[in-house]
Image (cartoon, rainbow, N blue to C red; front, side, top):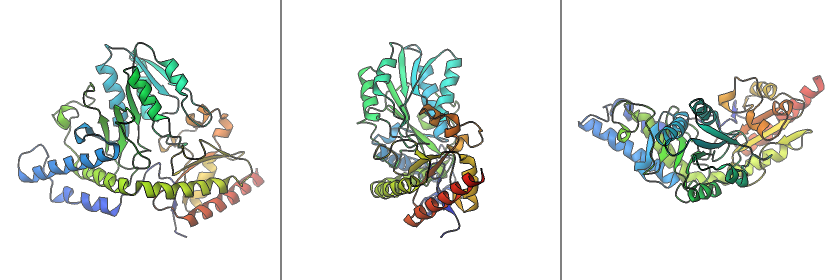
Length: 382
């Protein structure tokens, strides 16, 4: 058994060798500013365009509709703030959900402080948005719906196509945080009537600190960052070419193996869930089956703190989490789990195990056995 068994791929992933190799020349050989006119800068411009082409193929959009950002948090902020401010003359009502990533929730709260109205839709016990709730929440002044494609904590894949159809019928723009879904399950922004989508590289074996926002041609959106004319005048700042190149390569590699890897991970996910359900007092959070991300497992162990489990698993060389990495320092229970209807004490007993390319079947058996052993030891000592 390897020294470290990494089961927190929803938090981040390693950078693939092929990705790093393609990035390296842009740190040293091709170091020119892409906005300059000489040949080494032309090489950088071409590399950026190639990266955008590779990213666009994953979600079925035009490369010209891909705008590079510093990550998904910036993309979420830009999509929601930029669109709201550019279209406030049409209305000031935004619809989102109670289980969005904090980059969406805190952006919406900021807009509320500026006079915008935000409706936070509830979800059912498996984390699904009810289509009827969305329909009833729409008003004459609704301008934007922002609903996550697949939840980062519990893996729930939302009914995106139905949401897109409703938004289209009401002439409302639809944004989705697609970070966890990107290169794991199919995303077709055309078929699903998505006008904006936030993406990230470091969840797909690319570098940290780089992301993208898909903005459908014709969508009016204010700039979040002002300065030069980069990104066709929409996002100022000298492009981080090595990271952009890495993002593009990671996307190209990810889409090639997505179907096969999704099947493999789904099998391992279900095996781990079945193994954990053999432990007394275990509750699975989120859906069981096809409407869940193929690599996501989230469970509660009644009477055991999730943070204690994460600490003791780490001592066994197993990397797991007790929720989103963005909330890791919070002592409060996961707002995603409480939105499912879990009491705070039960929500605090959760852990998230997210699988990836490194995960093998033997890891599933080892982690399942270790969790059973640790949970029984904690309960015995309580």
